[in-house]
Amino acid sequence: TAKEGEKRWPSLRGHESDRIAEMEQALRQTEVVSRDHRVIQAIAMLKRNKVAIKYPDSVRKSWPQFWKFLNDSPRLINRE
Image (cartoon, rainbow, N blue to C red; front, side):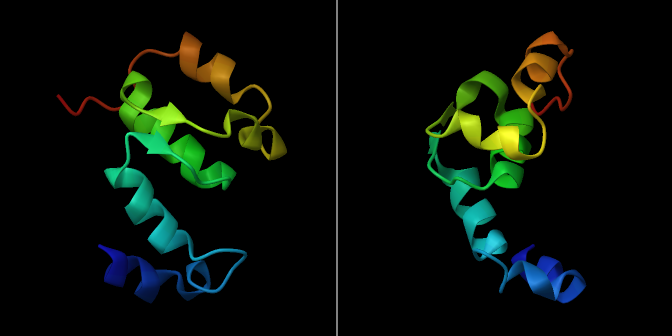
């Protein structure tokens, strides 16, 4: 939950953006509009082809090969 995340990692609220709020929002969206590479990577791995990413190049900051990895990987999380 958001409360658990804030308790464990209080810096998530006051970093460049409120990462807890961004993640909660991204989990509800069919298009992720966050520019945060961590949010994009997490949601892309979770939802795979069921979500659009508005700023896919944002992941280059930390993992330039992310999209190739995701495309070449078997399903990482099975939520169905």
